[in-house]
Each structure stands twice: as C-alpha cells, then as structure tokens.
Image (cartoon, rainbow, N blue to C red; front, side, top):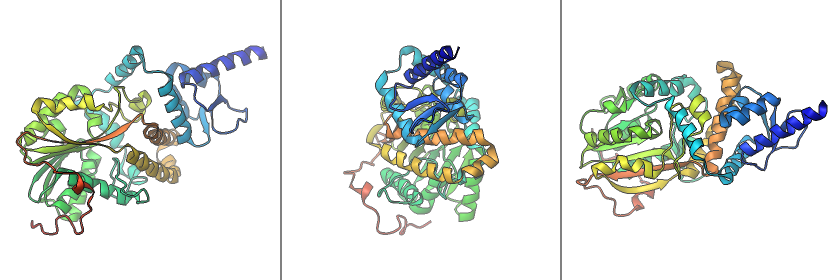
Length: 404
C-alpha cells in the first residue's frame, strides 16, 4: 500500500511540474525537508487542485496555506514564469478558457463599477500601509535607482506633465484618477485646470478632501462617474493605469470619448500595463484581485487612436521601473503584514502578498510591460522637436511664473 501511495504522489508531483513548465525549483510534498528554493504542497488534494486549476489552484492553495514556498517568493515565481514562457506558447484552447473567465467580469458600466469596487474600495487605510504618502498606485519613475518611492512617484508625475507639454491655463481631463495625486499635481505645479473622473467612491472622497485641504478646489474637480460620461471640451486627455480596466471590447468607445473631449486639436497620454503578445491576465489575479483586468499589446490598443487620426508622438516602455516600484510596495507590505492580517485575516494577507510578489516577478521575467503612449490630433500644434526636455529637470518650480 505504501508503494502505491508513493507511486501516486510521484505521478502527481510530475504532473504539477509539467503544469508549471518544469521550472528549476524543487516541487514536493511538505515534510521532506528539501533545501530552498522549493514549492511544497500540504497533501495530494492540493496537488490535484494545482493540476486541474493551474494558476488558480496554485494561487488559492498559497492563500489558504495548503501551498508553501521556501526561499525568496519573487525569485521562485520568476523562475516559474520564465519556465512557463519557454515551455510552450498558450494553445488556442488555453487562451479561449482564459477569455471565458474574463467574460465573468465584464467592463460594462455596471460591471466596471463592481470590478473597481472589489479592488479599490476595500479601504484607503489598507493602501496607506504600503503605498507612498500621496497614494500613487501606478508605476513610479526612478531617474536614480536609489530614489525613495516618494521621490520616484513625484518624478513620474513630472515626467507625464513634461511629455504632455502642459501650459498654464489649459484644461485637462483625467480618466481614472485614483486618489487624485496627478490631478492635484498638475493643478498645483503646472497651472492647469483639471476635471478628473473615477468610479471608486473611496478614492473620490479622499481626493476631494485633499483638494479642500490644499485650497485648490477652484482648479481641480473630482467627478464620481464612469469615463464614458466625460463631457466638456479640453486641451489634454490623460489616463494613468486605467486602460487595464477598460477591456479590449470597449477600446472603440474610449476612442470616441477621447475625440469628443479633445477633438483634432488636442493631445493626450495613455499609461498602462501591457504585453508583447495577446494573452489574458492571470486567471487567479482576474478572479481574486483584479476582476475584469486585461493588459493589451500595443497593436491591440492603437486602434482606439487610429479612427480619429491621432498621431503617436512617443512610446516608452518603463518595465524596469515598474519592477522597482513593486519591489518598494512589496517591502512596505511585508513590514505591515501583521496589520493586514489583523484587519482582513490571514488568507487575504497571503493572497495580496502573492499578488505583489508575482507582479514583481512578472515584470522581471518580462511577461508584462509598462507603456506610455503620447498622441496628438492632426490639428494639434504640439510636437516636441526632440526628447531633450523630457529628461532636463527644471531649475525652478514649473509654474513659478504662472498666475491664477
């Protein structure tokens, strides 16, 4: 009987290894005292769930403690991601199954509100434990790798503003404004008037409070509504980290919204997580962390600009910067781990730990990219002669000569 159990266990372990792409990491049952790095399963049931459920089986097993990783979690996950990518390209059936899972979280107006609520409205206090002091929940820009997270997030916002060539008195519309940091930064430092849209009630409440505290409510307005409801005429459209929540089926509508807002004379910037080849986001992340999310390739997102004859002026990939940003978030999260457990429970805390570590690994393994796409209408006079101004830090405050 013991030999039979041993045979079954060995067969299951080989199957798990195949599902994981045969990574250079030990995979075994707990209790065998393997040297790190190793992925250890509590029992055969956990092995079966990983075989049948793939990423979802592994992710849920890690969250509920049935799967343990000995050694550095990021390093182990990076090895698995690289192995999976080298092992095989996703089959038509695998891609189809992932897309079916994506359909469970549609990004219609009602669906988008549910999806955003599940991720962003779990409490601003949770995000304050591990984001920077301005609560910027997107890729930072490290002009120097030794910059603090706070410095790098300020640098990212300035980089966006310089790419857009903001001028005092211009009107800017932002789609998906998070906790309002960029909108406040643009109004405060570049002399523009900003209207920012977001469907997260918690984030809008926080952003409005910050605007009141800084006494700039006359220059920035936070609207709790869907990007599809954007009205008015603007000089500039900007979206940082929202395209991932739009869904490819809604890109044509987003293009219409942009054109309605800035027309042929305006310009804009889209900052988003992307891929080098079409592939749905991790099904576990889609189910447990980011419902409805999709990271597009450049080829997939560019058709939202082409019907309106928007010229692409600049494309930059900040992938290494996002890996570095996530590493900062992960370290802060780990320091606050006991507080997360006390507030949300062990399973929630482990799931988010896996999500952040897995995100670091994905950017390091180059399975995810971070694109910034700058564009302008055919009648827009804005056209940078060179990229020199993007990396020339101003010697004084950008709006020092501006009057309000």
